[in-house]
Length: 605
Image (cartoon, rainbow, N blue to C red; front, side, top):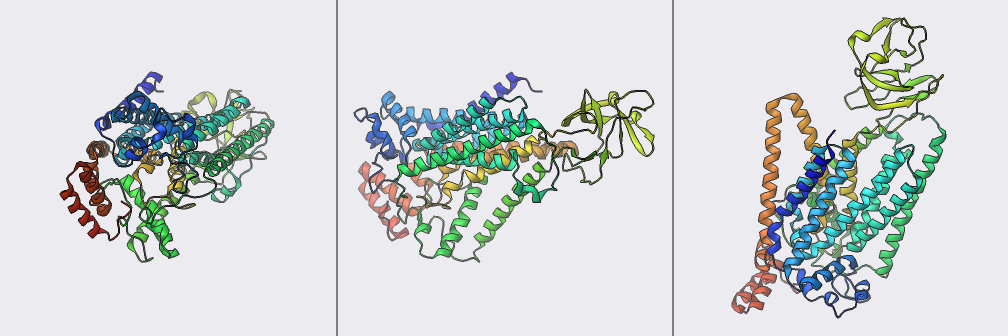
């Protein structure tokens, strides 16, 4: 059991490390979209009434205006206004605020994983991975990335509140008022996330799916595992009613927040140019579908291998997928199959971890780990009042699983390990005495209620697998708003929108890495050291990459130069604008000509 002060210390250390990695962004200037969101946004000025941020979009344009992007983020704009009141247009304060929020998000990631898994190595590795991820540079170094920072922070807080409701409901003495209050807190925090940035609403989708698939284990999951009978208990009825109330609170809350968000937009989607999202303006439906199928896997590749990053991925930076024979479709199919296979195996493993289930006086043992073979043999349990030593703590067991057997302890039936000397052969059965048990395994426990025995099923929990499944849900669901699935977005790829989904991605990698380390530790010390060294090298490489990428965001010149290889027309045109503002007209004219050669029409820049 790790001491609480150790957990708190590591949490603070991870948060501090995250801020140190981004420390050099404090001295950056306003770049790219910061000019429009900060310098020319009149909603930040003291002469503008505060209520104006409730009717304008993120850029200061009225939502009713035909040219509005419909990006309603009053909470983020309010934070900009506070920055302006404190320091005017000095960029240091804005960047400091971003770095501090990034540190808070890292702490929230640690707390969520630690409270769910309870394994310090998993939570610390997740936080460190999140700290050093180069894909987060745009969200932290760019001032407009604060929308993603705030949305992610409130999404994690909403998830904490939801997991609290799950914990309270898993306790037999859990308070109904506490569950309702925590559910209401989940809805309120997700609403604040939505007011920071639109995709904050997706956290309610994560909670609803997790509630259905893991907590309540809806019936459509039965085809993955054998159907078993669960014992009925009186307190189960009230628990099921509480589960239903919490679920409907989440559904109604999500519907209300979604309706409000659409109402603010006047139920109209924003209009974007063909330069922002070329596939959305393509007349060929097949090309649109194939391109949009490929883009999520491309985003996954950016998170996994961030060797090439850019401030902008518009225009032809990613060519359209025009044929099903394109090799990128094959890569996309492999990616989707890998994600689907991972999700299926995790879900199948989690819901397969059932406890002993009664069928009359017979009890069906199902596996408690992937290493335990499945069996349909039954265990017949009864009090053996005629045993040799006169104890009524003995049970006759005709089937033992994976070195464990059933024992009656303190009016409970528990799975326990036994000494080899405690077994006595009698009529082809194994006689086990509870007082000979070395260790009680608390994963399987049921109340002893006399004859016939009744087992009350409690949650058989595998924390790392449940956390991995939750992380996969988080990664997929929070990316859906940026996937062009339900509506077109104003970009092809945007690194800043990966800040929220990357929480799940980092957690998945951390769970897998810790599993790998455990296996390597069991196999061979040399292998364990090699894997550990490889992980350390990877983390250091990512940290260095993030620090260097921060330098690209120091000013507009360095930022646009870094994007020439990805989106040359847009980068060169923006670089020409910078030289033109500085009065270097000859250099600006030269860059404009090169940009026109790259793209025949760059009027959008």
